[in-house]
Length: 413
Length: 158
Image (tube, rainbow over all chains, first blue to last red; front, side):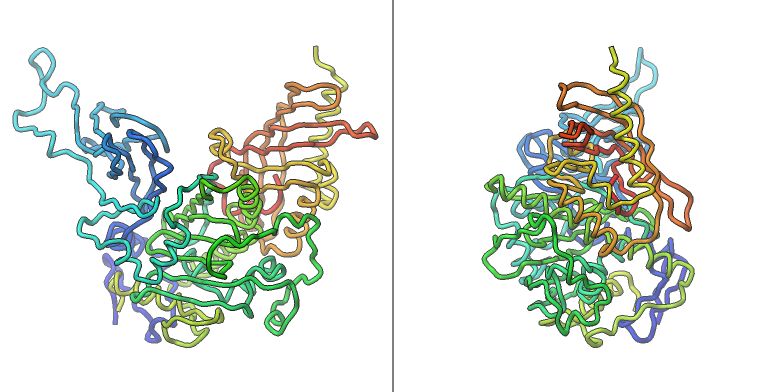
């Protein structure tokens, strides 16, 4: 069975979801189709937090897939979104990442747009001294910027290039909505800051990584050493019915050797922190989960690891690289001790993470390994061949589910 | 008037700082910072906007020691060389015991299969203090980096 990709053909291996053909990590035509069908397709992409644009006229620029978009708050307080590209000649309209403005003015010929993306001003529209000017049939309403659908839920902004999208609960499914609302429970959020990485690997490797609990208790010596995530802990993998979103849920254990750590070559049982404030977690959610990693199609990871809360937004650049934008946050009612705790635990994550550093390194090594072998394939057999939820983390089920959905969107049968 | 001896003494602290990170021994690097130091590697955008998130945050020499141990024993990473260029060291305030010092820095990173690249570029915004034994140490060190995108990951302190 084959899937046609803009002139190239992809033959998905006969083993189905237990194989990943390496071509999907490096083929420019496949990448272009992903941008069209996944990121500009029927998906709700993460676009920001409401606290980033609290006032009328505030805006932020971000990317959905490889498309630059502007997210604004209009004079009525409603959140809007449009493509960051002047309707005249295609110039990138907005050059600042954050700001406040009434009009977005193109630097080239100063066409100006309001916060809804409507074209409001065209210099020399009636000519100068009776020369020039736009033709009589020029209608500004024909040149609004392409608008995005916008949805917010408890302070989080999602955007879509489609205009007949389901609600977020319908999109996420019941279980993923429940866990999304666990972190975004309606409390006001507090922005703690950003960090960004350019990771030299295909964007899907980031999702694979977070959907893969099998690696976490092997690669992440730091996590295992300090009992933050380990194969013998009570844990679950849960998905939506379509397999596009997933949850890895786990409960913290102790720093000790056990049958489950026997296979971990680098376990540092003798590693005692000199300053234990680095790992001083407190329980803050009603349930007992201490780690919940949620992957939301097509571009978002919601991270709760102990008390560090972060959103990771995946921005693909080309087949071989993506930007990972981290937004760390807490709640407006956090006391100073909790804010400091979140900031300390952030050492484990982001662009210099004691734990996530392993992931960016291994993603690069994966890309290095697969890029010259497009006709070979990776293997996803841990935990069987199916795509069901599990009550353990010795499984690649969420990767199989992800690729099952990916294949249906991409037409790779 | 520039106190030439003090200027050279401060610059020597920065030179030793860079040399320990680039050429080792790494285990001696935390000794250049105070027992109750604050060490941050923070994106300039966060710093300018008053957002507290740092990508490395150590609130004591103990945390620096833990960080170095983790880089050597727990973090999986490709072998690499670093090279610090530290320039424009300026004493901008302070008194006999505590000096406010700023400097520019650029850290090059070399991976075995790639050409050298700039890992991180920015400025140090520091507080340097004199110990009982007369030597200098960093009480606070903020590595405020301009280079928004981190190429893959920062493993060693900058």
